[in-house]
Length: 365
Image 1 (cartoon, rainbow, N blue to C red):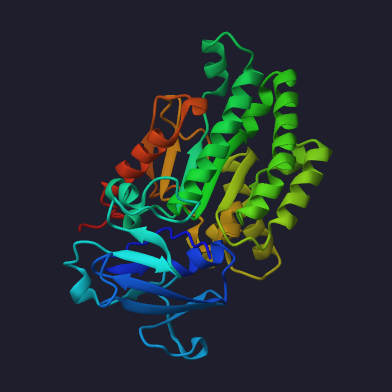
Image 2: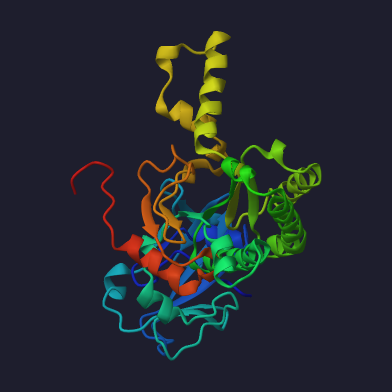
């Protein structure tokens, strides 16, 4: 059985474990894990029995049957503490499923999960899973300038940008990012040359067709936000089909902002509330920030609708009408690389920068 563990640490506690289980289609399956202070010490290993059901994970350190396990949850996060006093001083530790090691703090031990191409020890050293942003937003900027710098047509830049997006989606999955929102086209971008826009629409359509099977395989749930009525009818139909097909996928949520405007998003939310007030359903003085928040297009993401981290490529340092309401307390990271050149090292630097910051939300820590 292959299990890929994201967004967790095994020295002191397990975090968001249900998301990892559901991500790999293991929901409601009982799992038993071996935990050792020393990877070679089989006699003193601890057993942690888990079962996921309806978003809750039960756990037990005995041999209790799965249906009698206790469960715990804290908001959307689940925490497990296994013999904390003894593990906090552990020199080495491994996590196994059956006889396959899926985690080890020993760099000499190879992790069995195919979804982790780097050693677990390397990821542990560079990125702290406890501090990983849940929602990352990216302004994918610089495709045309990347092409121009190489004497190519803008279409070549968009092709390269699509490959960069596929790479970032894969990295987001691997590192436990739960929501990834990408800015693919703004309403202002409709002012670009028709030839470029036609190519871009065809590229998006072809990309969705090519990647749908991968979305299903990797349990990726994809949603689109924006004024989709401006898109070609064939693309609108395909988007609706892809959304329906991935609706129940419980892995990474990929949100594509296409023909999107942050100002229009706020405006349409206010218009919906005004209509409710005219119908006598609410009073104007009763309108709150949370009510506006619930009418924004990003409400489909649930409680993680507001990005923790925004990344913008190409050296530009502005929001360009992207998620204006939602990013009131988002951490910003700007990188000079054009989007097609944005790779694993750039992404990792952005996440490390985020993990080094203290998020105060207006208060003093």
